[in-house]
Length: 135
Image (cartoon, rainbow, N blue to C red; front, side, top):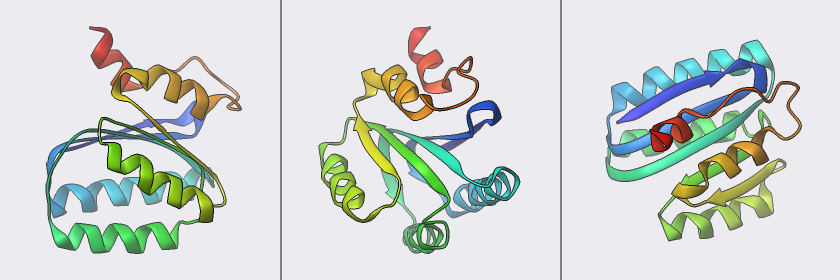
């Protein structure tokens, strides 16, 4: 399942991955993401990976193509996850990505948000992932 949230004041797109990722879900969210980028210019991405389930191979291919098309459209990417292997992937990505990329653990969602938005004009927002854990 994929969840999508926009935080316009902070230029942040928040994606929450929890379990199986279907192609239709991905395509709907990809469209929203592209519209957000077209409207805002650049974006910051908070990706929360709670659990990775099966992913349609077509999604992996489409997501790779999306990443190359929008390589310069993200100034910061924060990935919140329990998956250790993603930290290694992010370290490699940071070496070639023009923006900043940083990994956080699931209990560091608020810290990820603060890092992601530290240069945003309005810091009054709060990530959905933090609200979920606070309740």
